[in-house]
Length: 291
Length: 185
Image (cartoon, rainbow over all chains, first blue to last red; front, side, top):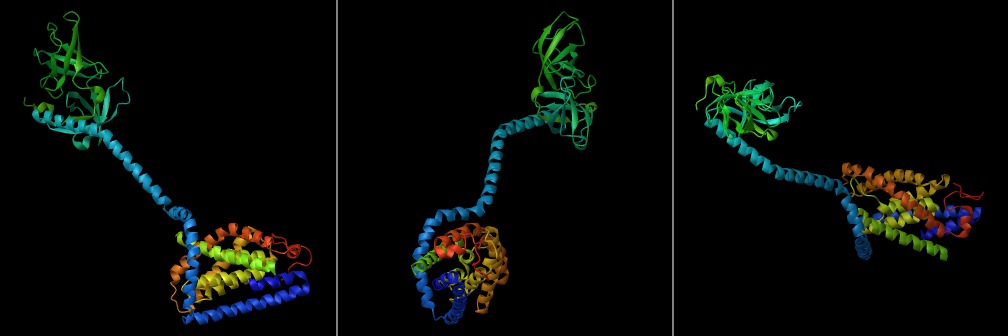
């Protein structure tokens, strides 16, 4: 650069000077090329090792000065390749976090469910019934007209239409139709549902009919009897009903009207608004059940 | 001569800054695929702005400094960058020096100098890992090209500031030749 500056200035002054400039800059270039070759030759035999060392020594302070000044910048750029990885890590942690939070929230539900399952199991084994546990998938689309739920057990699980469905508290309803892996259950509160029952207190037989939304009514077969509030109603003896016998239906809530025209409202044992873990009774009703 | 000394001093400072930035920052970034070479880009920019003399001077000196700071024999980088400076300085007068043009020049010269350097090193007895060396070429040249829009305008401004008024009569700072006495090659 030092040597090439002068010809450059000459070169633009006059055309003669430019010709000189071109010539001398060519000479300079050739000289530099030769210098390169010479240096390579000299240095290949480690003749200039000291020069490398000295240059390194002289340049180190400059370099470290730049390095310290540029370090934050360098760190920023050095971090760039990791941005995606960090992003992925953040997403992973967010997923994990959400999962943990969900677990925390559902822990209570899971406890309730396992308690439900245990009590259904106890109920079933106490009554000598073979059951298939199931969970409610969804409530019937025509809720309000036809009270149904779908459960995640179907024909493949041995569920057949007509089977009784229970939960830990008592009788829920009856399987209406099944597909391979799911079934539709008509709830006991469905207006079309009637269950033959026995009043557990006075032993009278009767009929419980669904009245929709958490309500049922009881009609004793013998018009002369008058049930009392608090009477426990159980599904009727074999033969009186197609449901599995001796399951809790509910309790008599109130009795009104004259004999022969009684209105008996029943408090269902099952909370039909919160159905979750259910069980289908696989044991055939006609086979009879040991008390 | 004072203007010439000024140019030499400016060139030396530019070379030292470029080399220091290269060794302390760019080489340590660990950019994926390759490493940009700021001294190379500076040499090309200088040659585009000032022609053969500037290109050759910058190329030889910065190459020599790079050689001195590395393990390979003196003169290898100097030779490569000298040739880059001379070639780029020779072609510049025929074309307008737009930033795009400078990027094209840097891409072509980057590939050529990268290969020439590898060949020279191999000839001097160092075993060159060719596959990995060539694998780093595209990204390295790509980074060089990306440096061009920042370095080339700076070089043009600096060259203009350090050019004598007599020079400027014939040569606009943006590289276009004015009048009939332009540099012709």
